[in-house]
Amino acid sequence: MTPGFAGAEIANVCNEAALVAARRNKKMVDMDDFNHALDRVIGGLEKKNKLISPEEKEIIAFHEAGHAICGWYLEHASPLVKVTIVPRGIGTLGYAQYLPKEEYITRTEQLLDRICMTFGGRAAEDIVFGKVSTGAQNDLDQVTKMAYSMVSVFGMNVKVGQVSFYGLSQDSFSKPYSDETARLIDDEVRKLLDSQYERAKELLRDKRAILNILAQQLLEKEVLLKSDVERLIGQRPIDIETKAKRNGTLEEAVQVENI
Image (cartoon, rainbow, N blue to C red):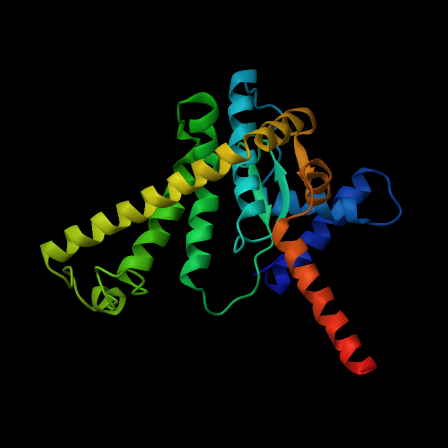
């Protein structure tokens, strides 16, 4: 549950878990204490004095449910660990925590799924309320950076071509490409983002009933773990397929051995 953490950060989580257990007058630290410690380290202190209106809380619940559902059904999205609408830190009104794989290279389809998943929050707001809010500012920042990297750094766009301007832009004070290329990059980034936003909306329209279920549960419980989501909407499809393939491979191996 701590991908990318350094040893000192993991030690900090352990110390925080011990403090949580001590406050609860426990003699041992258990997994529940570690979960609370992770929330505090990753998301910041819980803002118990922050008053949120029922209308805003509903928007936050659907926003986070949108992220969770897109991540649940997209093949290359990271597995969901927890989704919460408890306000934490400075300006954090809720978040979905994922367990990303440790990868050294990333394919185009993986980046597209991540952009689509990040759009899930705003897409859910758009579908349910017919309006969007400022709550997606951080999401928009992430997808814009990813899209520009795909087009102008990783050479993942047909029209811009197999070029990367990253090294050139580091060595120069001016743009290493013409105004025409700059306009082309901007146009392709907008097309990419618009297509993934529509993809997120289409997925959530298809799963609208599940979106409502997840959002209502978030409003009631405020925190949902992966096990809660599995209980509500079933196991993640990609996990079922992976398990079926693994079982099929094992069965074939057994049949060959028997022959």
